[in-house]
Image (cartoon, rainbow, N blue to C red):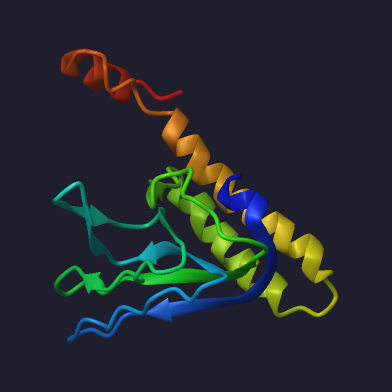
Length: 166
């Protein structure tokens, strides 16, 4: 089972702005919950495979129980992010990398604004909204994993394929 199939309901949609002169304290994700952070402004460092990766608008962090939220802002460019918290039906193993990228930053910003507006508008059915939010975020994360060159290819060919836009 993947993360998408484990989602029961949306708990909250919010927007976070990191402080300018201090790193926020990371928070652990509770049992029975998942939290997605979609970076919308500024930047944050995230350790992946022992290397710090600079993440900017469009970075998607899919946190599962026990993971810590992002917290290491770029100097003078504190990150901002959409936060979407879901309750889970059952424990789930990670099927996608914790960090992926929504490659169209304008589209990511539009989604963030819509998610906030829709969540706080009582007209919308929460179950349908949950499915929309979860499926969109999962699809963007999944698509990112499929749109990268095969790591088994020679590096020169990987770079060439990365330079070609689909």
